Length: 438
Image (tube, rainbow, N blue to C red):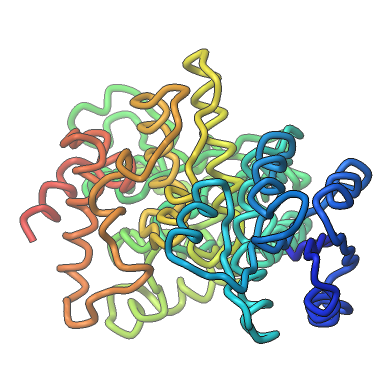
């Protein structure tokens, strides 16, 4: 977002002209004022995105303009330029509400860079403060280029009948996408059955997926339908498909090819009319190279592929999601949404969010519960976020070490609650314990 209407306030006509020339053509509308009274009249008449004011002027200083704007207008970016730059003056200006402080003389590049920095803050505040309800297309919050591409893929996949493979990091919303595909398709009135493959023990996988007949094994007192039969006519969502064994992969491949299943203990095939949507946070191509995932099954699943972007690659969606979750949890608690300090939002923007949307949601819930309606300052954030380097990693660590570090960070963020940490990480408690031993 670029400021569309900018006001330049300076008593020096040469400075006004210079700044005007720097900005003209780059921004939609640039207006000028030579004194405080002219500036206040323009502010009453036009909605400005950014005000650039001189520090010292006759008949009212730049600080007076800044204070007036802060008391009477919301979400206007404030920049001060001055030929009398001092540390004391800069401190006073920042305390009054100035967000960019530029000493004269400055270059066109320096001015445009300062405006670019300020534009991000303006956009963030407007995203956070907007009163209109957020549009959740397909149940997904976001308007970045990356997520709009996903919307397009959902629309195309929902109109097809082919198998879909959704890939992406843990916590990116793969089940939301699977549900969107199903409920936008002609199968929307039929069942949608989600299956977490990583949560089913291998010895139970076949009977859970395909069902069993009475007497198939000890304890099978009655026949029971599996997930595939439950999803008849609709869609089955096989989450974490990369976790299933080679033996189960063979059976799944047969289902895709023949469109029929065999209940455990039965030799009679049962036809099934379902759409298979699979998801994984692993690179199945690499797993096939290692021999732990069948190549023929990979190609059968990967007819239509939707790759979900991680949160750190979704441009400005972070502010929209923070706004959504903070209002959601505040409503649940019966309180007003908290205000996030600019410094707090900057830390969240710099953080890589390896747990993606799931990690962000859990964090915002914790902040709303702990802070209520109060202003959320950086001190309220977990230590690992406040002290993290912006989106960088120690490239000498092994993948197992990086995973272990993240697991411990998540556990710390929920006060050591292993059940909650397992839910965020989308693993069972046994898997969580093994990862903590790494």
